[in-house]
Amino acid sequence: MGKAVGIGGIFMKFKDPSRMNKWYQEVLGLEPNDYGVLFSFNGNSNEKAYLQLGTFDQSSGYFGSPQQQYMINFRVDDLVSLCMKMKEMNVEFVDEIEEFSYGKFLHINDPEGNRIELWEPLGESFEQENCNEMK
Image (cartoon, rainbow, N blue to C red; front, side, top):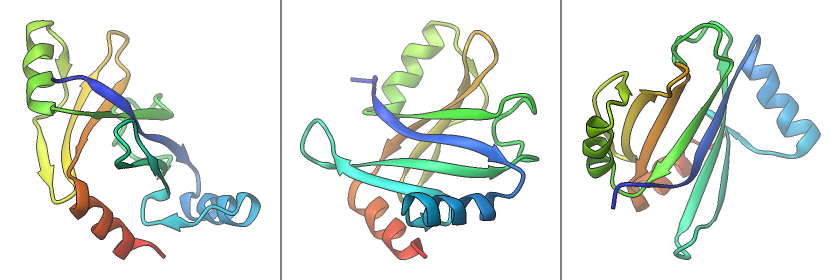
């Protein structure tokens, strides 16, 4: 289909990401992983879905522009089809599709230059890998 089906994560920059992970754990009772805090829930199709609160160092270049303090990760259902559609619409691509055991990723810029991450999760391997990474 090639469309966004939900939010996969919200990423924020912090002066001290480790301290923030600890704060989220102590104050809000959230269990951190290597990337921040992972939430799981049942998605629209009753399959398990995930949302990552990512805590990044303020010097991270992952968001593109140093002025961009937040980045949204959208879950998509067919990244390759969506990529073809976006090329026809002259969307600005930051990189090429990368594939990992837990999903495919692509970064684009919106018309105002804000970096957006697109993620097509790959089911069980994502769940197993992230369960193993939990602290």
